[in-house]
Length: 200
Image 1 (cartoon, rainbow, N blue to C red):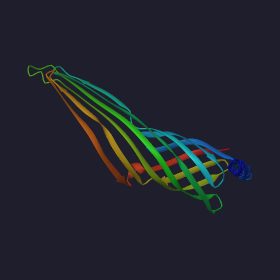
Image 2: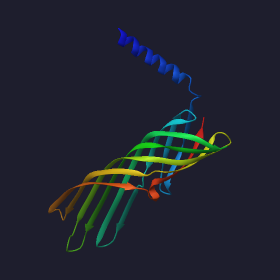
Image 3: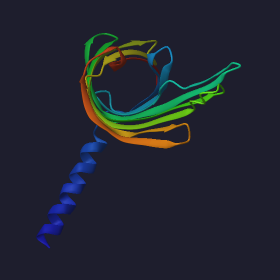
């Protein structure tokens, strides 16, 4: 009975504390890694602490080259998802510092199909699929204008584990498969992001 009462009191205290937080704040917008890498972002929370949800469309490409002696088809596609928490602190009016962390996941698939029409008939198909979970830190700035629009820039130092498969089929005679594993970490031009969001 005492334990139940204690749990009820803790839950009540938590609900009351949440109710006393500042007005909820939400943001929805676009994020850009580069000219061909963009996505959507949604944030919800308070003025000082927000949950972040982002989806990032990585490059997508389909290409075909045909000649008298060969035909080449190449395609690649992928996406990324991020979920995390960020905290904000006002530096001066309309300028905020933000910091936090995200859990991240990216997927990519690449395929090359080469049809050799010459006497050698060196046909080949190569496919690669990679799954990459990871974590990144968030360090950035927001500039707020007209009270509702937020222009942001952030650096995302990262640690990523990669796993997947690579498969090659040559002349329809034999197939080679291999597993891909590894990790990467650091800070580079793909770990910088620009965002434009509407606050409500």
